[in-house]
Amino acid sequence: MPADITHAYAADHQRCDRLLAEAEGVAAGRDWARIGVAAADLVAALERHFQFEEESLFPALTQAFAIAANPIEVMRSEHAQMRGLLADLRESIAGSDMDAYLGILETLHFVVQQHNYKEESVLYPMADGALRGRTDEFAAAIADV
Image (cartoon, rainbow, N blue to C red; front, top):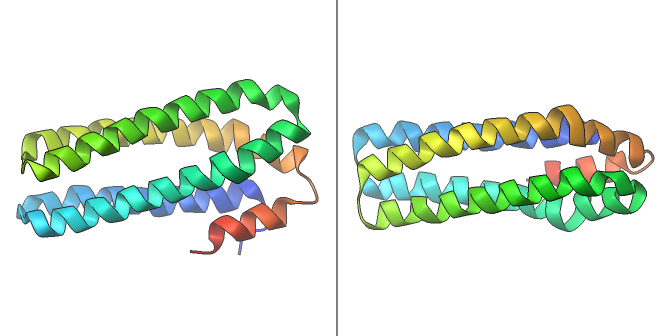
């Protein structure tokens, strides 16, 4: 199990990325039941990840290192943007709209990759330094799938 925030949270990003790729891959079969399951798994994984950050990591980091508040607000706004895309994704499934489904996944893929890069290169290393002594706690929590 990763013992620092950067590696543990990046591993969870990779888990979410695999689910995003799966949601894209099942579209080829045009089986809306399978598409719905894959999308639901993706939504659950992303929401779980956002929840760990917003309810645990971000508040702790802000308390330990006040300057982190600005980048955290950017991350929260990006979470909101992604949640909007996830809502659109669910609507595309409800309407069996393959073009919308694939377009939303493409946009989500782009947004997620940019977001993850910022977290993995800036925010998580900042957290590892500011929350020294608690990194095991945060790493264990996100890794407990």
